[in-house]
Structures are given as structure tokens and as C-alpha cells.
Amino acid sequence: MDLSSKKLPIILIIVLIGILIVQVMNNDSINSKLIDPVTCELYIKDLQINPRQYLGEYDQKCVDFKNLNP
Image 1 (tube, one colour):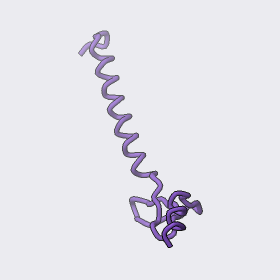
Image 2 (image 1 turned 90 degrees about the horizontal axis):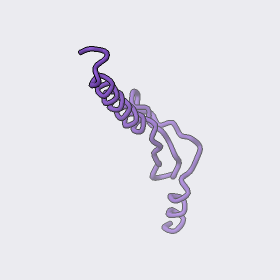
Image 3 (image 1 turned 45 degrees about the vertical axis):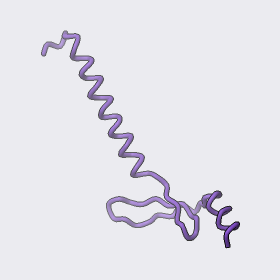
């Protein structure tokens, strides 16, 4: 394929957009915040060693729901 070809930029753009989509999808699953159902505290989970890292923040909707249903 020649560098002056009109197809080369289109192919490169499609490949780069595909890589970007994969990165965004992968990043969302790694950094997604989870809610502890017992304490309503937000935490993140490390996918390599699986411990919970609590953030010291609470989900207000969960806390409100817990207060309505003791």
C-alpha cells in the first residue's frame, strides 16, 4: 500500500477509533465504583488481587433506602 493512497488514512482512523473504544470500555470496568450492600460505602476493586479499597464515601440513595427499611 502506498503512503499517498487515499485508503491509508481511512484505515488508520478506523484502527485508532477501535483502539480508543477498547481502552474506554476497559477503563470503565477497572475504575467503576461499587457499593457495599451492608454499609452503603463506595469502594473500588483491584482486578489483579481482588481486595476492596474503601473510599470513605457513602451512596446517598442507598443510605436513604436503608433508613426507610430498618
